[in-house]
Image (cartoon, rainbow, N blue to C red; front, side, top):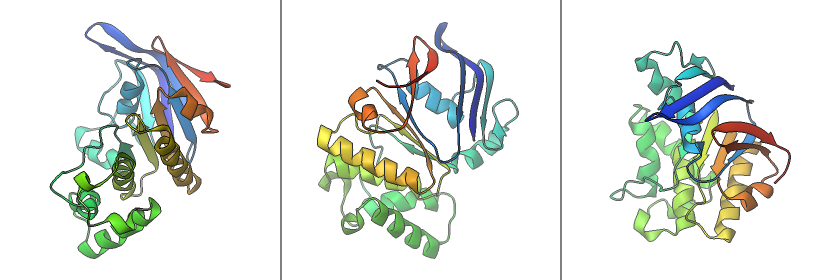
Length: 220
């Protein structure tokens, strides 16, 4: 489903990723680990074509970095859910409207929007918080809203970029269990984190980035 072939990326003459080859299967759970600044976020940005390779190719489903046209990128991104560390919620909208916004910008029908938003809020355990504003939620609840928002388009893959970075260990485990349950229903998940303890408990395939290169890791 996702395929990197000999991908290299350089920013300001500084190599970030070097000759990366990686394949992620449909409905797979992959933990992408490495220290802060090693290129985890860059690798995720390559998947939704926010960054294009300087060398090599990235293929996501039917889309290829060498041949994709600019007008096709929004189509690609509708197949991908993205969870950011810093939430990026709209502070002037409640939980329901934050999740619904994703569908509104794609011109989904109003009746369909309501059904899908309520379904994903139930999936992440936040139905009872649908009318709350972001500033009324805990850190773990905020991250659940972000996950619900990323799922409402029914993506093939969920990219989670340091989703537990600001959370305590107990809440981090709750988010991990939620990601695992999402994966069990058939959505591929790529979890990027520097939290090695979390990865040890994920039971997932582990890929490590170190000095710009990617390698499979048997255990940490």
